[in-house]
Image 1 (cartoon, rainbow, N blue to C red):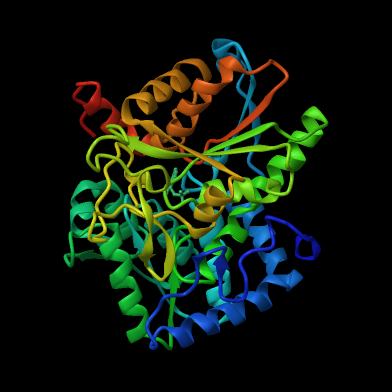
Image 2 (cartoon, rainbow, N blue to C red):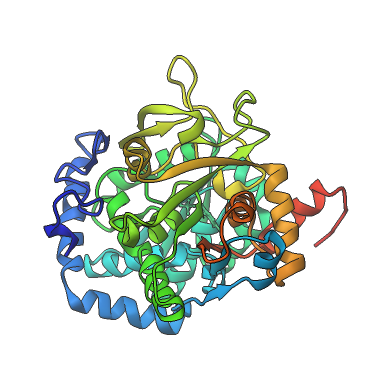
Length: 408
Ligand SMILES: *Cc1c(COP(=O)(O)O)cnc(C)c1O
C-alpha cells in the first residue's frame, strides 16, 4: 500500500487535508460538521470492498469501463517521434470522465441516506453527469449554474432539465462557475439533513480533492495495466488537460511514485499567458491564495480579488486548480505548461482528420502539447494522453472560430 511508503507522492493529504502547504479546509463553523461527517463516511466507504464492488459493477455496465488505451498510429507517424497512446475516456456514458467521480459520490450519498443532491457546474458537463446519475437512482437534483453560463450553454441546460434536474441560475458575483460553487456551499449549510454536495473536480475543502482523485484514479489504474499488457512496461510520459484538475489527477496519481514516468499538466493559455488575464493558467500564471475552502494557486489581481479567466474551452475556465496539483507543481514532480486557443484548435483539427476522433477542446489542449514534444522524442518513447471528453459539445464553438456558420 502507498500508505506504508516513505517519501511517497501518493500518501497525501495529511489529516488536515493538506498537500504540503496547499489544500486544507478553510470553511465556516457551520460547514465544518458537514465536512467532518462526509470525511468520516468516505473513509468507511473507501475501506469497504462492498462499496468498490458496487462502483465496479456500474463502471462496467452503466459507464462502459474499462475505456480503451488506443495507439494513435497516424498522429504518431505525423509527428514522427514518440509513440502516442490515447486513454479513451471520451467513450464513457455522457461523453467524458466526469461520471467516474459522480457515481462514487452518489453511491456514497445513498449510503449516507441523502435524498437531495446539489452540484455546481460551469460549462454544464458536471451538471449533466450529476443529473444523469440522479435520474438513474431517483434522487432529487439541483444544479447551480452561473446565469452567464446558463445563457452560453443552452444545450446542456436542456439536457439537465430532460434528466429531471432543477437548474438554478446564479446571479451573485459575476454569475460564473466560482459564484455557482459559493451558492452550492450556501445551500448545503441550510439543508444539512437531506442534502449531499457533489463537487465536480479535485477542488473544495478536504476531503473533496482526495475523494474525487480516488474516484478518478480508475483512469490511471486501467492505463497502467493496459500499457503493461500492450508494451510490457510503463509509459514514459503522461499528458492531461487541467481545468480543476480531476481527469489529470486521475491519470497521474497511480504513477506518482514511478520516478521514470514524466508527468505534464496542460493549462488553458487562452490568448497567451502574457496577455492580461486572457487565459486560465492558474499554475503558470497565478499565485497562491484561498478559494472554495482550500489553499491553492489562483488567478487573482494585486489585491487578491479572484479574476475570471478566459479560454476557448468552457470546461477549463475555473480560476483555481486542485491543491494536489499546486503541491506537485511546487515539488517539481509534475510539470505544468500552457497551450493557447489557436494551438488547441490546430490539434483539434489534426485529431479529427488523422484519427477519426472529434475531441473535446479540453483534451485538444493536451494533444497540442503532445504535438510540441513528440517530434523531438525517440520512437520508443511512450506517451499517454488523456482523451477525457468527446467534442460533440464543442463543434459550434469551433465553427465560430473558423468563421463558419452552423445551426443546430
Ligand atoms: C470538465 C472537463 C474538464 C476539466 O475538468 P478537470 O477537473 O480538470 O478534469 C476537462 N475535460 C473535459 C472533457 C471536461 O468535461
